[in-house]
Image 1 (spheres, rainbow, N blue to C red):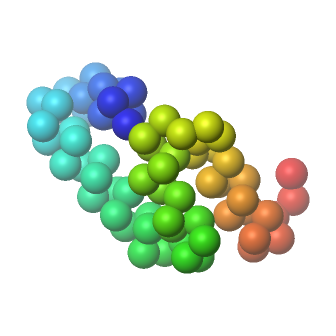
Image 2 (cartoon, helix red, strand yellow; image 1 turned 120 degrees about the horizontal axis):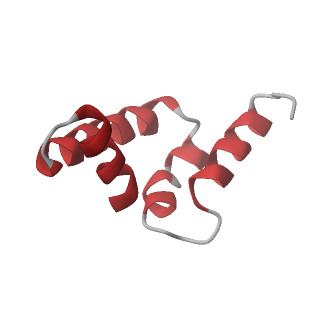
Length: 68
């Protein structure tokens, strides 16, 4: 998650504490919109677990029937 916060800080030109708040707000929002099996993986994905956020997105796409 530190990498994402750094990118938000750099691209938006805001302090790291504000970027962290923004990132956490977006992640909390996503957790309310994703199906339960994937919403629970958001924290794990951004904690640097194996697979990471890309696997969460792929799983969500597979769940809703998106094509590769």
